[in-house]
Image (cartoon, rainbow, N blue to C red; front, side):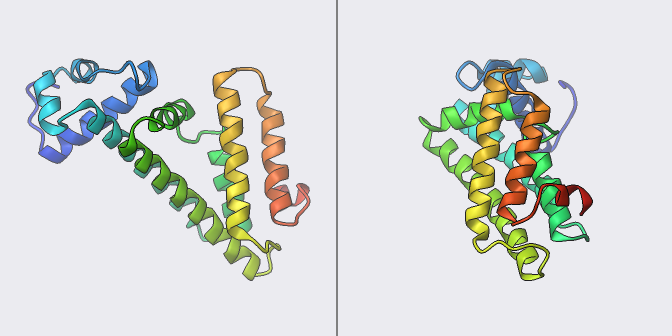
Length: 204
């Protein structure tokens, strides 16, 4: 990337993408400013000019990844179709059996957030926004009579807790849980929260 003149915003975005890639490759604890700089062919000083410390760079990288995932979620939930179809699409995308965000990245983030208050704020905000978005569509579908759910926020909490737990198991212990079984559990959990039979998810 040396020799290419980028705006400040473009340069920062490039560094954030590279940082996410390096975290996925090396982990939060092991990644260094030098790794990001080397991946981009720039100096350590340039990275530090834009992000004054590794901690700030890592937190900004996770915030960048969070915005990316929230944009995708809102696109799925904003489709002009039934609430049930939107929920099914979002939950199946979020689940570790599909093409959701890189689960290794977020498990790294959760772990590091135990020690880094700035990163903890980022991951907590992402978690809050995911739950609120799901709860809003659950409430919409329940009000429209598509299904019955007396506690949309509670349903969103339980669903994301299940999916997060499955993600940890399937990422940390690859092959320990068949993807088809995890997909079945995910569909059953969603159906249960909405007062439906799992077969109704496939016919919606």
